[in-house]
Length: 311
Image (cartoon, rainbow, N blue to C red; front, side):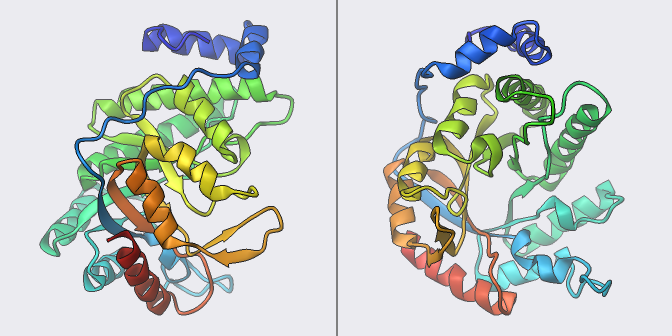
């Protein structure tokens, strides 16, 4: 696959591949070893800032299974981030009102600024694996809408997903669809000063090799990786994290990690810090708490432990 084509013509090529016009070429490209690209240029030594993902508060921010109303709002979450001593707050899209207004976004931005917080980023649950049609159009429209919202919030990055292979499709065709969808949205994101960071989150990004295929094929200066410490499940997930760290625009830290046996073991925060330090990463390290317990207490505890390890 020619990674040096102009963005527009390259997208047309990828779309054609997805539809089968060049399916053989696409399959060949995916079967051959990809040429490595240069890591994201860094200026000087590593520098970490710390944030908390609103996903950590999901049990408080969404309705209960019995239909009970949420017990906290994003405003409450932002206040807690300030109390914890965070540098930033990640305002995950799932917990916004269904009808998001620009005034609401500006009110959150105002609150963050007055509390001395950046909006470190946001996140969406997109899927670029759909073929051309209504659902794909909806997924791209969702991403572009949140690019608009991120610009108003002052969020520099959005965590995105690649998606999943659909029935009656192939990995090669789906990869082409995903690449073309990401490139289209990156082109729009660049017009608004927002980066898109692809997360290692199952499906074709479940392994470092799979994620790096996107790093090599997506042609945009507004694209990079969201390193999620808990989403590789190989015999050596730390090694996989080392492979993708040079391309990081953002980092999510989970408090546990799991291998092929699915057994949870505490994350080694110091080892994670070394991986990012060795990659000269400069940016946000975001705690994303997913375990049981009192989330306010657990987030406070793990945030301080994580921050100390990355200091």
